[in-house]
Image (tube, rainbow, N blue to C red; front, side, top):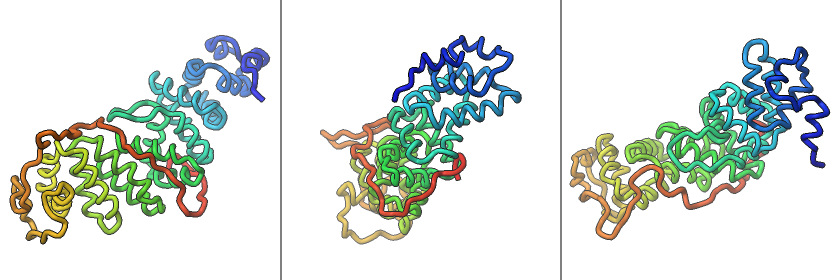
Length: 329
């Protein structure tokens, strides 16, 4: 049954202008709750702003939790965007904290799926970005993604991984997240979302550092490294000279060789070269030539290239896990 919001606001007296509500000598919990549930998103932000300060903190905490639990997902995402744009980061983060602490993964998934899809390297103040930052800070991202998959919210898991690939994770952050996802038994078919997005849409130096760090964890992330090399060789051909230069400076001949095989410059069965031979700037010890785009070839040469082409997010055969506790956990 759909609630008549206007009737509920009038019946409770919560339909007055926000300034009048805040000036009431006795602002009851029921009145506040009705206002934050049924007033327009802009009014909710103004009401929360009016309660800022030590005296209003207990009421704010209750309202954050109520919004996280009950406000429809699309409206809650709008509330979060307005709060961030108004400089009310504490309110937005308080709502996300309550969401991750008290609500099941399915509710988090609903909010993520109501959030705009990330397409560029700039943080956008919406639910996905706020959740990504909160869980990255607490180290709980992998657990949340596992719970989202278990709850049937594969698209939400994809969106969260895209957020990390495009804005939130450095190369080292991304590799640490891949390690944790593997420990949570999230398969490579899901982890590829992060690997592909990072290689396609980040600056070439970041991609090179990502490949280098993956190359140091081949025992744990061998499949991820193979996929990253394939994507970089396919979509970043115009940037391969820069990527190789960074890898050469790191002395990472193994990854250089993988790139050469992926681009067809070396056969897969070519004998390995002696250690350290790939340090020269022209990469001649590996028999490689500089690789800008050949005539007639294109290449993605900057972040913000095409989004990952594959949609991921099937369930994993694993036990049902509990709700993520705390902003991270």
